[in-house]
Length: 356
Image 1 (cartoon, one colour):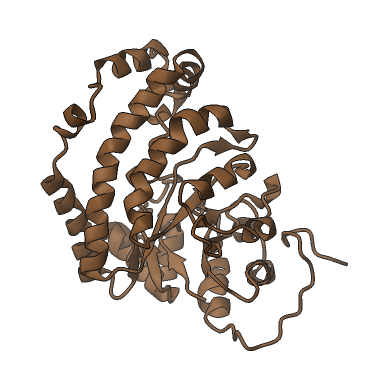
Image 2: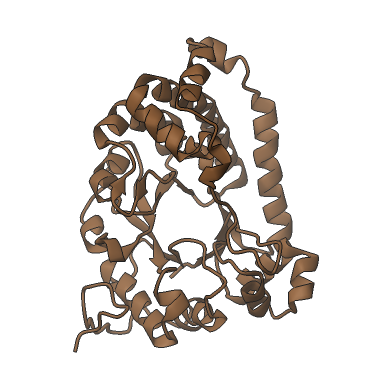
């Protein structure tokens, strides 16, 4: 059962996992993250979250108050200022600079990650939906309603550059003989479902994502879509544009991996799963036995681990006991014997829902 690290938060948690003091962690946070992943006996690592202070809770957030002066017309103005032709848009794209950036990432990973396989999650490859990071939620969502074509144009322009980045990555995957996996896909849903109309997404957004990822899909790289919120209304859209796996899952919202596993990619492949230890319940508030139960749940979902990579559902918080992470990664996943008979005790998400 391959295991993937990288989305573990909390400087004190990472220091504990790494077997070092918090001060030693803070002296070189990235080295501490790598040391923690190695201590967990992880096989690979996505681009890691790297807490840089003892009190840091998140690695990124959008504070709406910072965008209070921005109106939806700002997106219209941005769209009107952008070129209309693909040729003009690509004139500003530097293939050399982008290739150098990606090369630097991989070379650093090979030199410093001590054998952890790099599993890229370059967010620019998964689409450019979250314009709210630049304009705020109110202006962005209002513009989606008032000026949908303008929002779509911004997505299209950004995606043309990202398509060229994807072509560079195809070359580097072959050159570096990378594991043919990429983890990406921006948040398009909250706990109530898609943030905007699925009809609007299908008309203006999903075609731009397909344009980006097509070179990678054609080259045989399997793309895993990050799934926050209630993604059920758009799961089939992810698959239709070329994704062939899922990561994350908020089971408490009704997202059912058993249902997801029934699907096939547009090339007929079985789904891959970067699943998806719950960062909202099991890891922070469960006991080691709950963690083992959740791993068993993933094994049952995937019929004994087919296409399963063990990972967290999102970045874990400062409240997560290190022992729960050790249980999942180095105690259970690495000692699990695939030839052992499995006793399926339930088919619903296990934490707090154990069968009598």
